[in-house]
Length: 267
Ligand code: MG
Figure 1 (tube, helix red, strand yellow):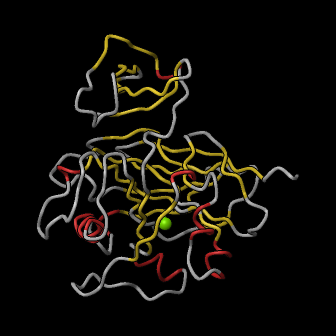
Figure 2 (cartoon, protein in one colour):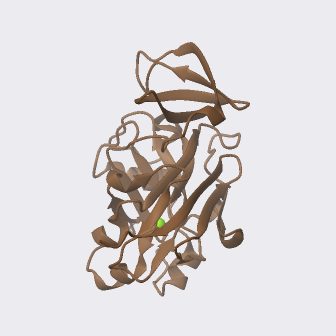
């Protein structure tokens, strides 16, 4: 099932998408009293918004060994004593499919990081070891963890490098089951193209820290609420973006998130 979020007559609406037609729902997918209405819309008739507006976006750094190596870092281990590197992006960084990533003048090296994003569907606190994550997950989408690499390297932490407005393209929709099986997130190909050229390609089966482990570590610290987003880390092949580029994150079974790149307006 695919959930879309869109604007109609100034209102933010939710619906599910089937064969190019949106069935409008009365509320968010996790709302207790939500129901499908009788209203149907062609997908092309409404501009899609990012498929949720989370309270928080929690990201995993260095979750693919080849990407850790390309940035010159030690590869983290998944041993019980070693925890994933976590950081946050502000929800204000989110942009819709098709919107422009704006390059801030203060950075000379803004890079793409295509990732699988997990959307929480049910409050989750202190997930136990061995407990499945799927009861807490609404579904999956594509995310671009846009990063000012030069600022990431010079700042002591990453709030600036990861937090500029437009640095979190998200979408195009939430797919609840990108593949069959009890772990529908495991074994997904994550590809990033710039102007049609393949730049990043990885598979979530190569995660250093599994989604179960990531959720255990996050929920030991903070409660996850419906709509919260987890960015699961990027494969090798990150690279610089320039004004006029078109960047696409594709996950077969989910879809393609496409965005343009623009220079900031000069004051
Ligand atoms: Mg990342």
